[in-house]
Every structure is written in C-alpha cells, then in structure tokens.
Image (cartoon, rainbow, N blue to C red; front, side, top):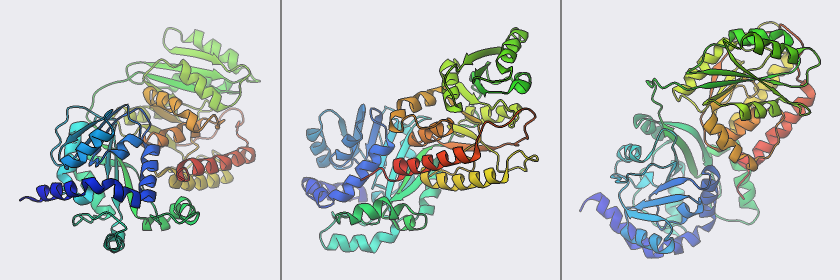
Length: 474
C-alpha cells in the first residue's frame, strides 16, 4: 500500500472525530480563521487544498468556493455541512480542476505531502497571473512541543510530518516558479488563557525577533511574472499642482510617451500664483501634440483629494502620480511603466533614499523621518518598504478600483494619498516594489509640506496601521 493511501486511510479514520478535535483546539482554529478572513477579501473565487470538513473555506465567504481533500469521508462530511460549496475527493499532488481561482488556501498541509515540490507545481493548474496562494505551516521549532500535546490528547493526531525550515520553503517556492509577496508568523500561545493569550498573541508575538518563535508561519505567494510579455497599456499621469506655475510646461515636455497612449491630468489645488492660467495656456499650446486635461479642486484641499479626483477622471489602464515640483525626473516614469507592464510588482513606488540627493533636496530631519517610517511600515505591512513618502506611485486602474471597494476597512484617513494606496495595496496582498530615483532640488516655489504638523499626522497613521494590520485579530 503506497504512502498516499496510508494518508487517506489515516484521515478517513479521523473524519468522524474532526469536529471533536476542532473544539479542543478552538482557540488555534479561530486565530487561523481570523487570519484567513483578513487576508482574503469576501466574495472571491477560493480553492482550499486539504479542506477537511470545509469549515475554513466557509469562513472566508467565497463567492465561488471549492474544497479538495484526499479523504473521501472528510469530503462527504463537508458536502453535507455546506451544500452551497463544492467539495471534491482529490490529492494535492494530482489536482484535476479546470477553474482558475483568486485565492488558494494551503493551510497546515505541507507537512503531510510526500512531494511538496510536486504539489506546489500542481497549483499552476488553478491560478492566473493575479492569484494569491496563502500557505500556513508549523514552525519546526515547535516539533517536540506538538508531539507532547498530541501525547497528552490536546491535539489531533497526525501522521509523521515533514519539517521544513523557512529557507526550505523559500527554496521550494522559488524552484516552483513562485515568489513571496508577504511572510510572517502567528501565535506564541496556541491555547486560550483568558486575557493573557490575546495580549501576548496580539502584541508580544508581533514584535521583531520574538515573532520568529511563533507556532505558525505564513506565506502569501504569487506566480513569478512573465518578463517577456510584449503587451502594452495606456497610461494616465496625474499631476497635483498648487503654486507650481514655473514647472507646468517642463512637466508636459519631459513626460515621455508611455505605452499605447498617454494622457496628462493636472489637478489644480487653489494656487495663489498663476498655476491655473498656466495650465490652461499649455493645454491650448499643445492641444495637437499632447492629451492634457485640467481638473479643479475648488474648495477641497490636500494632495490625497487631488489624487483621488485625478484617478476618477483618468480613462487609461495605468495610473501614475507625478509631483508637479519635478523633484522626481518625469523621464523616470518609463521605468515605472515597464516594471508594472512586466508584472514585477502591483504598486510601483519611487525610493529617494538610494542615490545621493542634490543639495537641499531633502532636509536632514525629513531624511530621518523617512528612515524611521520605512522601518515601521516594513514591520507593519510585512513587505520591505524603504521610502513611504515618495510622491511617485504607479498601479493598474483595476487594482485601484479594488482599493476603493476595500477603503471602508480603513476609512478616509489620509490627506497625502500615499498611505491610502500603500495600505490598500497591502490589505489586498498586492506586491509593493520600489524603484530608486534621483531626488532633485526644487527649481520653483516652496514645499507644501509642513514637517512637524504632517510628521505628527504620520505618527497617527503609523498607529492606525498597527491597529489595522497587526492587532486586528482578537
């Protein structure tokens, strides 16, 4: 009898007791369910590989949900409990499904597989370029503790497990043509001690260093992009402009032709100089050569509002933000376009903290602030971010529309517009990629940023992000 048949028989023997064991590990199960519900938006197409009796799949509220499991008895129970969804008897190492899914749940499964590489390769049958795979796995440091818990009857028995390190999993994902968008950990205390468990798991377990000791490791994964695509997209460049009359024409002249077509949208923010009249003059001057539009903010204020108004006006596939002060070279937008076109990332941002800056381009306190917020948001979002505040950001309009739909989770909290996009992208598991850019000194006017007033606001956003991303569970 082969090992897969042994696994099937083993879980068939446990199927009738599955709910009993779930009740014994109710706290652990609730943490996993809360996590999956957080990272998977509702009403998506979801496949769970190794679905058991279907409870986790149902918790994420899929529009179309499919579960597969090697145990026919588990599948029979799941089908009876949740007739709304489809449950199939299939092996993770031989998937036979024609559908493509937005999200694949691969929870607590890697340890049971004869061939992890084969199973990961099978997932290519059911994903597309935009799909995300959510993998959870026991931290191998917990092996002996879990064995003791099983011996004491506190945990459901399992067959002998594969024990893979974080490096092993990273290597296997790379071999199987996947890349990690995010990774992190959960649970220092996997059982409920009133007040204490929630405090430790929601706060202490999130801290750098300590989180390496957590029981559960998670990986949010996507297919490696096709870097040979020749597909082109249309582009809308959004330029918020307040008291920037001296740079308007240069912005128009220096923005390269991007993709199949390029439109330039100026958002005029109630300037006290002649920015508005200059934009109108340039629209007329270049009407036969450039697609230029004007949006007036009227009584609204702030760059965040300007960006939203510009994005709402944009008609093209890709949305770009360029600051009107031209401290970022407009010519660099071609780099951002190519990175997004080739699917190297989903939200492409500039990083001003790599190349040397021109004199006075950024004050010393601003540099320190950027470095601090970079470290803070890298920790909070589980993605490496060097420069949160660079104004140049690029994404597909389809992804921005998803951020709008999901905005109710955060609310209208961001006057700059940067964190609305960063937080929204992180919540949707979009890959954030940074491109180093040269940061130039201003050649006209003064900055519209107040370092201390806006710095305090950024601190508020940081704590807001901590609450929403790290402490959202219990």
